[in-house]
Length: 116
Length: 118
Image (cartoon, rainbow over all chains, first blue to last red; front, top):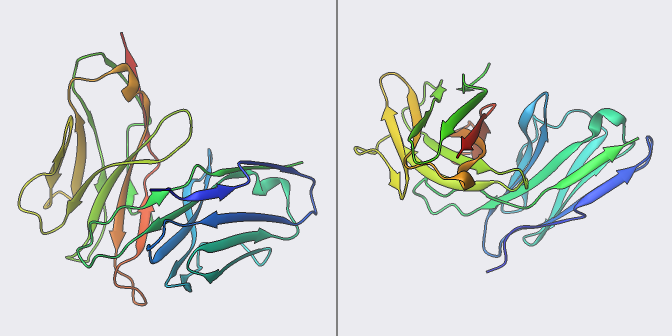
């Protein structure tokens, strides 16, 4: 059973460049989450989707960030233009709503983004 | 407002001893779920244990148990018989309902770094 797959694992880019992070959730899961982890701010929820529909994007820091989920097996998080303060580890996670509330999030291995 | 509070930034524990990691939460919703995750130095997030707000008994999973005190709004993780491999960051998280989604939103505390010493 393949877990959540994120690509790339590492991304180094220059300020002003566009960055696209990719995520393939676990097959059959109906929720997908994007988190950002930094030393200063910890784990922040950026946005999450249910059945490919964005439910809450209140954590997206600003208009430079956008996320899409065109189908049940793929999601992207895009930063355009990137800035050094966007440097962080970005996690994608998925989950299945079984109606019992106890379903955990399954995390990918994360993408470490460095913006110079 | 901070919903999940983990007051211990770091802890040392000797191998084979038990350790308790504190977690308090804030919610006015009667229905919620509490989760603990482990993040070793390699970076992955590993689910450990879950406690539902209506669960009558404290959750247990192997060497992990959850000391759930609903009235105090605390959900402390107990790791028994610590092993060197338990050295990691541990996160407490809570799932709340929202006006637009009755299930999904999970928010994390700041984490507690645990170092197990021989």
